[in-house]
Length: 406
Image 1 (cartoon, one colour):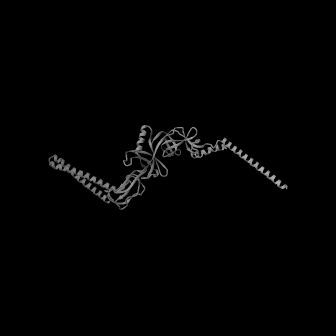
Image 2 (image 1 turned 30 degrees about the vertical axis):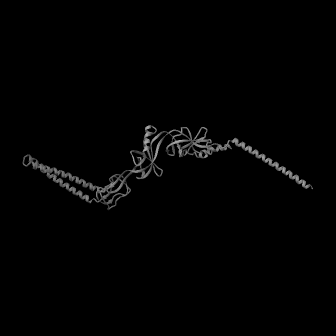
Image 3 (image 1 turned 135 degrees about the vertical axis):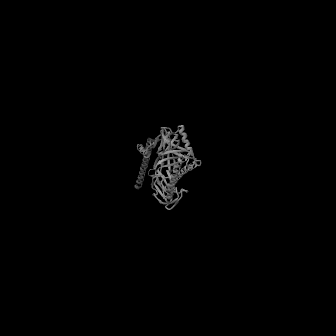
C-alpha cells in the first residue's frame, strides 16, 4: 500500500528538477545573446575595404599614334638586258650579296665583238683617208698662192680633208658604240645589295627592245617604312602646334613594332603634301635601320609615331578607367574616403596608360585596384598607394585590422 504513494512523490520531484533545468538553460541563452549583441555593438562592424589609389599630377606627355605600315627597300634596281642575245652563263649565287659592277650574266658576245672589230677597221680606214686628204690640202696651199693651180682645186682638197676628219669622228663613235654593246653583253649589278632569284636561265633569248628583266637587286641594310594617316588628323596636329596646345619635338620619333614584339627606332623623313583622293589619307615615310634583315620588303608592320607632346596632362593606368557607350569614368576617393564616379575625357593611349585631358585635377586620388573588395556601393574605403604589387598590398593591410576587431 505504501509503494504507490512513494512512486507519485518521486515523479513529482523529477518533474520539478526538469523545470528548474529548463529555466536555467533559458536564462543562460538570454545572457549569451545580450553579451553577443553588446560585443557586436562595441566592435563597430567590418573595417573599410583597402583599395589601391594613385594621386593625379600634371606632366608632359608625348602624343603617340599607332598606324599600319609597309616596308620598302631603300634602293631597288631591276637588272635588265640592254642588248639582244642568248644567255650563256649565270655568274652569281641567288640570294647572295652583290657589289655594284659585279658580273651577273654573260650574253653571247661574239656578234658584238665582230661589230667592234669592224668599227675599229673602219676607223683605221677613215684615219688613212684623212691623212691623205690633209696632205693633199697642205701641198696645194703654196701652189694656189703661186697660182700654179686654180682656187677651185685648192678648195676641193681642203673640203676633202675636212670630210676625212668628219669620217674619223664618225668611225670613233662607231667604235665606242660597239664597245658599249660588247660591255653590255656582260651584265653587271647596277647597285650593291642582295639579289633575288634569276628570272632567266642559260639559253634564254633576251631582248633589248623588250628590256627583258633578268634579276632584282635590293638594298635592305636600311629600309623605308611607308604608312598613311588621316588628312584630318594631320591638319588637327598642325593646328594644335600653331595654337600652342601641343609642343613640337625636334625630331619625330618613329618606332616599328614587329610581330615578335621587338621595337626598332627610326626617323621620319617627310609627310607628303598630297592627299589621296580615294582614301583621304596622307602618306608618311620613315627610314629604319635593318640590322640582321629583321624587316623584309613588302612586309606589313605597325608604326608608332611621336610628332608632338602635350605640355600638361594626367596619366592613368588603363585598368582604372571604365569605358562604356556613355563615356569614360573613374572612381575618385573623396574627403570622407567615399568613392565617387567621375566622367573623364581621354585623348589617347600611352603604352598601358590613358592620357586624360579633362575631368580630373592634380592631387585627386583615383582608385586603380581593389574594386572587387568594395561590396557596398558608396561605403568608405581605406586608400593605400598603388604599386606594381597593388594586388597583394590591400590584403596585407586589411589583415591587422581584422585581427584588431576580434
